[in-house]
Amino acid sequence: MSGDGGSAIVEFVLLGVLLLVPLCYLLLAVFELQRAAYAATTATREAGRAFVTAPDVDQAYARADAAARIALADQGLAGADTHLRVECAEAAGCLDPGAVVWVSAEITVALPLAPASQVTVRARHAEPVDSFRAPPG
Image 1 (cartoon, rainbow, N blue to C red):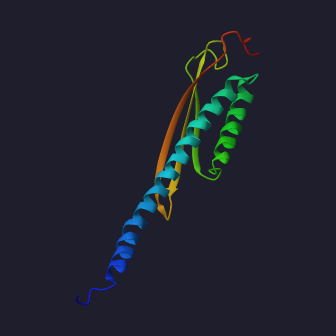
Image 2: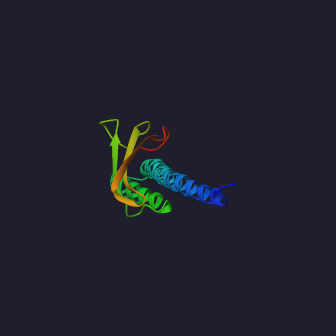
Image 3: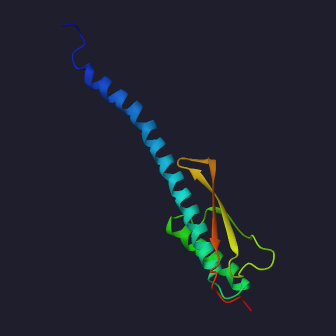
């Protein structure tokens, strides 16, 4: 036996730390991106639902914006850089029976421990207006 006694534990700890730290960071980054993706999907879906159930177009945009903000706040992204856009497929009217409303969102989030590294997550949702709804007006 030479002077190697007791060095196995040191090597194990050193290699464990060198492998565990990047793995933990990778998991934190993936969780942050998944949270942003879920928030974007939920925000577009809820904004679309709020839009098509509004009594008129003016209230529809306000309701869609409020619903998206609530969905983002639920995921802790109330202060995130967010762009929400509502588009109508029909030129006649957004809330006419049978119309389709498209809602898209872009959320920019920073990766953990690296605020200069940002990733943009996008989501898009189509919400039909009820065919048996009375026309607005």
